[in-house]
Length: 315
Picture (tube, rainbow, N blue to C red):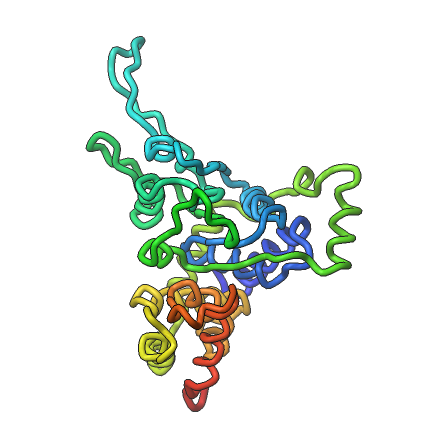
């Protein structure tokens, strides 16, 4: 697949999703880049800002199978992965797949279920397969998990530990739309919701092809070192209790590759790394307790690190 075609398809996909999610261009772009990087997305935000609609819009845009799971304290791992049941007609056991067997899976309010159930989903995210009664079942391609949680509600919740947060390639917050965008949202939904008329602009098979192209985007040696310096700085920073893991370095580079592809390039630039850094590193660090001053504190620290690390000369 040629780089110009990849650029056009990514642009078309982003524009299609923006027909539903208005006033949040960068959040939509990062969601699509996360999808194309073969990663998974975490949305930490308030109710009613479009988290579910974002997931549905992406699914409809790629003509993919969409499943939504409302996470609750009584949800079991088998409610996600599926179970083996006895078929009386066949007189044999057969596997009944759970909602995780879809192209786009929305894990709504993931922090409201128990760690045991959370782990069942996160294993599927990491391994791209589930094992039930000793039998391994591969998940469909493409496979994209969008998990949501409310950052302000803590009663009756089970916060994701740092090791599980690290499984998400990107973390975003949609937030309230600007006044004009909210007015446009209201007007567009007076008769019917835009999601009802949204059509696919790319196939699931093309998504898989783009994902393979992105993996081959060239990363110059000095940019590998640049990404590594940024991640190492999160571990050595005096205000940080827990820095980013090696998975953070991989995620930073992979997301930069997707950004380069969206610009029609087959190589990455330092600006690609800087553009995506806050979205893929901020949820991977833990600040010291007295410095946790709101939702944007982690992002501000990543931005300060980016300002301190010198960009490779000649790039």
